[in-house]
Length: 499
Ligand code: NAD
Image 1 (tube, rainbow, N blue to C red):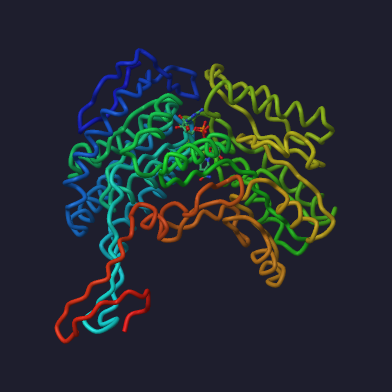
Image 2: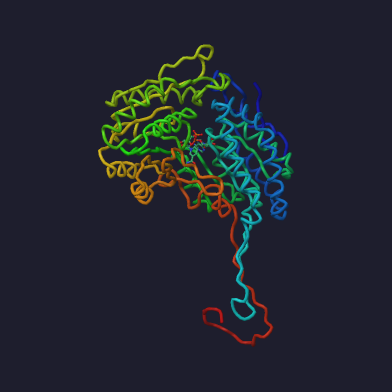
């Protein structure tokens, strides 16, 4: 067991608060490291140094910044196995899933290699006599990223790569439950040539986050985590005049039409419902089969697949399907929600509670649970469970299924399985959700699109990575320029268009 440090100005700096969080291996319950929780003074000092570093970094031309991104991307690739091991140990997901987590972050780094083209301004020559109009995109200065535990590589990379490529300095506050992946990524960024101070990793809890929100030098905050915290951070950051984009929790539905390929739909539900122990903001947690026969057939196909799933530590072999959930508290919360589902009248088809794995009795394992006959008033429907629990809400018509999805307070992702193009098109047009899959269970946009949910899944205007990130992390200066050759002298008092 070690005590990790902050990473300030390229150096490992011990925390001074005397307060620590604990990061544990969820498969064994063993303490991996103590995580220092920064004081506001520590945070402010890191920001001050970041502001100094940003002055030089912001002046580095975009082509050179792109070269640092290229080296960073190459180093992530070279260190894929090592990063996946760090990630799986602190998060619990399988090694192939950890590699997917890193890969999807790496793809954002790859898009950032195009930062010179992606941050070009606009130009209109000869908008009037001797007049040129143009816009330039400039970095904001120091920005902050606050990230959740569930994608320890991908989401910190969503934040740090575009922010830094655009010429900003970043304060990254990773989840205190999975901090080691971020620390290693930051070391690789330094090795790629990123000047010290441009990326500061500061660990902390609410005290540190509040200091971020109240620090006047920090110009923008990008947050990903649960909805109540997203809403809180959005409100406080905006009140303090910061640009903010805060992404929250989810309850993602998959509608399965009677004409869908039910074998493919069942496979998709297994992957999207139980992969990563359901700890994905794009996990499918609600299946909405249309018609009783569709529901019955799907359950029949799902049960044997669920019974075959291997829940085990990431070290348990190539055939492990998913690992533990993140903490003992999380396991207890999920199991309590399953109990509430039974109590409130849902039919528990498979029960993942009380799973004990030989040799890993202290691990936070929860097996796959499947509920049928769930109704929207039940807690298992209303709450984001964030565990391996799939709920069936049966509906008799497509219209009723669509209404259910649209009435949900979350709006992150959704999917429809159907063979009918007209129904699919109608769903895409009418569903009130930010990311939609057609015969595609987890429609996370690729890195050259942007990612973001609606309603209580996302607060703020712009989405993450892709084109929106380059807007979020730059401010646009609009310039009107005139040179006087051939223009007569004169005074103009009226507000008018250009001649
Ligand atoms: P969380 O909200 O507990 O923590 C997220 C971050 O906020 C962490 O860095 C944490 O230290 C900090 N934090 C926690 N409590 C705080 C407080 N009271 N004040 C200020 N900061 C605080 O989320 P989590 O458990 O780490 O992650 C899981 C959640 O994240 C789920 O709800 C999931 O749906 C969501 N998520 C959303 C997306 C998305 O893009 N919409 C992506 C991944 C995860």
